[in-house]
Image 1 (spheres, rainbow, N blue to C red):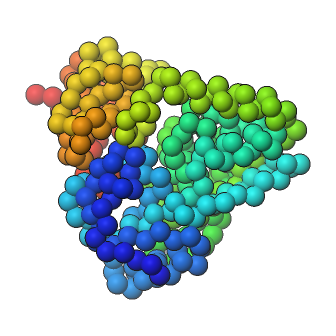
Image 2: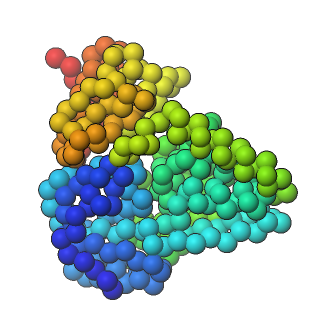
Length: 299
């Protein structure tokens, strides 16, 4: 096992913030993952799993556990005739989107601009362009962080809903996912759709600065970005963290932000929205070393 000590986690998140982890590993095989889990359980060390770090806020202070980064567990198998696609958890979602389009498989064109991995998409039920992971996912394979056992879970068993799945509640590590896409489509047409989707995202979202993607889940029948923008909060800053002038549901690291700057800005947005509209915006962002409020009282 290649386990490193005291590794700065800012280099493993798209926000480019986060303090050191006492232990960090980047396994490239399932065997390595099982060894890491067994080692952590034997040493009574807490594990946390990260993918591309694109939906994650990590505290600036030392995290005492083991971070398992899945980015090196990549690769996919594509059956052009059946539309069955299997990919490892660390495979970037945009990479898979491009691969299946070139194979004439319809169903993942929306995923080209999402800066995450297959594993993260399954956990969060990632989505865009009115589509989501749950609509295309057949099943996943996971390993229990408690006992190291490997098993399969079907789409129905994952209890998908908007940006949620059972995986957010269980102590499991996603190792691969199986998708059922529609075969027989024109490759050129799918590539054009995929490219247009990417260009649309590039034009409407702040890809030129470090961010985590969308910070807040959309309330029912509303868009979080529009609520925040109408409050005049675009461009508002705390330290080096700024509400994007391009898209109000993005917080960007505009000037050497700390994780605490971003955390304070998230709380400020939640308080302003709750005070003006009586709505608590819930975060899509996961966290290590922070707790986002599930209830917010405004005095």
